[in-house]
Image (cartoon, rainbow, N blue to C red):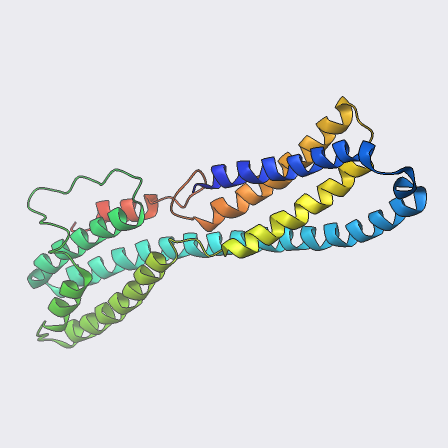
Length: 254
């Protein structure tokens, strides 16, 4: 389910709870709506609201931190790919086929991570994505037979770069799925629904009350939407751009 659909459900649940609280006000006996009762409810709901606000703030901060980390990982991955290509270029002409395979593997990586984007058009003769797998690139670099100290140094650097790049690549693959447990989200929405129901219980029954309660529910549901969007860094409205890797792709093989 998309973050927009989930946040819409959250909006309905929270505002519906507030509306139910307003409607139940007329059904409660007067002794249950005294000033003392109102003070007790305010005190308890203040604690619940504070806890919910802290959890929402922590979730937003955590999702933003994860999003920024993955965006930095993509930029670093693009830089590693370009550096690896230039190292292979300096090694000699015998690495030309390895560089073509490297370009194909980057092309395949973009298609696998950004599923909602159109795949870039490969250059003629560049081969398929399967031919450009990172495993094949690694094997071919490992099979090189350097003849000079400079080539041996370049080969060692290339192997280190491809190890780091492979680790980043699989880390990006593993972070494509959502990391927020459904039970956690349900509990947080339940806290918010209870809080807004208590607000509606002691609120006067007129249009301004419903408008303010709806505005508050909209703000909270938008926070949930922001959390879910940041948690899906490679899809949705807010997503990490593939442009760094696409820019790197244009530099490979030159």
